[in-house]
Length: 565
Image (cartoon, rainbow, N blue to C red):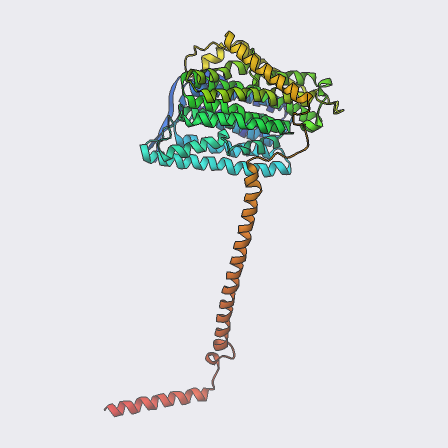
C-alpha cells in the first residue's frame, strides 16, 4: 500500500498528525515514519509515476532511479537519527517543521519535472526557516528572516529558469540541462544558492549555528545535499562546476581556522565538503559522479555526528565557543569518542567513511589530468583535517581546562551519536553496500597501497604543521571575535545604503506632499471664498429683488418679440 504513495508524503502527513500526539506515543510515531519511508523505497521499481498534464505540459510527480533512490535512503536515515537525537526535547514547532522539511526534500529528490521540483523546493525553504526560528533567540529570528529571503530567491530563480527553458525546448522535464541557454544559467544559480556557492554561501554560517542543538543537525543534512542531487541530475559534466567546487573547498579553510564558534567552524567545513561534491559533478565521469554521490551520503552522517557532539556540548555547557571550552574529556568521554569518529571520517582517515568516498573524487580528477584542481583538492583535504579533524575535538575537549564539569550527554543523544558513528565506521571498513547503491557500476578499489600511503602522508604532515604552529604560538588562538565574511556586505553597507536611500526618498516625498498639500489648500480657500457662506455665489437675495429681475427679463423678451413682429 505505501509503495503507491509519493516518497516523502509519509513525513508530510506525519508532520500534520504528530503535534496532536502526546509523550511516548508521539516519539514512537515519529521514529516509525522514516522507517516506513525506507521500507517504501525498497518496494519501488525504477520508472516514472504520477504522470499528469498541467498547462499543456507533462508532469511526472515521481521518478525512481538509482540517483534518486540513494539520496532518498540517506535522507530517511538522517531523519531517523535526528529524531532519536531530539527525543529529550518537547518542541512541537521544531519537530513539525523538521518532519515537513525532510518530507519536502525527499519529494524534491524524486520530482521528474520542474513544476513538482519547484513546489517541493520552496516547501523546503518555508519549513526549514521554522527550524532556525525554533532557536528562539533574537539572533535566530533575524538570521531566519535573512535565510528565508535568500532561500525564496532561489525558488524564484528556479521558477524563472524553468519558464525560460520551457519556452526554449517545449518541455519542463527535469533532466540534464547544461549552460547553453539563459534558462540553464538561471537554474544553475538557483541550485548554487542552496549549494552555497562562493559569494552565495553566507546564509549557511549565518543561520545554521543560530538554530537549537537539535535543529542544526536536521538543517545540515538536507538543503545543501538536495542541491548536490539537483546539480548531479541537471549539470553533470559542466566544466565550470569544477572550478566552483575547488574554490568552495579552499576558501572556507581560512575562515574556519580563525572562527571561535565551533558550530560555525563546522558550517564552514560543510562548505568545504560540498565543494568536493560539486567538483565531482563538474568532472562528470562515472567515477566522479559516483564519488560525489557517495561523498554526499557519507558527509550527511559524519557532519551530523560532529554537530551532534557539539550540540551535546552546547546542551550541557550552554556554549560552543572555543575560548570558553576545554577539559570536557573528563566528564564527557563518550561524546569525545564520537566526536573523534566524526573528525576521522571528515578527514578521510583509512577505515572511516570519508576515505572511501573522497578519494573517488580525487582519483577521478587525476584520471582526467586535472592537475590544478587535483592539487587544490589535496590542499583542501589537509585543511579540513586542521579545522574539523583537529581543532573541533582539541579546543572543545582538551586545549585548556575551562573548569566546566558538565554531565555526559543525555542517553538519546548518545544512542544517536553511537548509531551514526557505527555507520561512519561501517562504511569505511566495508563500503560495498554503499557502492551498490550508487548510480553507476563501481570498479574503484579504495584500499590500495598508493591511496592509503598518500592519504596518511597528507594527514600526518597536516598534523605536524598543526603541532608546530600550536607549539610556537603561531596558530590563531581562540578569541572572542566576529569573523567578517561576504555577508558583511549585505548586513552592513547594504543596510546603510538602503536606509540612506529610504531617508532621501522620504524627504523628497515629504516635499512633494507639502507642495501638493499647499495647492489643495489654495483651491479649497478659493472655492470657499466664492462659494462659502459669505461668497458671491452663495449670497441670498430678497424676494423682491428676484421679482424685479424676472419682470425685467420678461419685459425685454416682450419687446424683442414685438419688435420682430
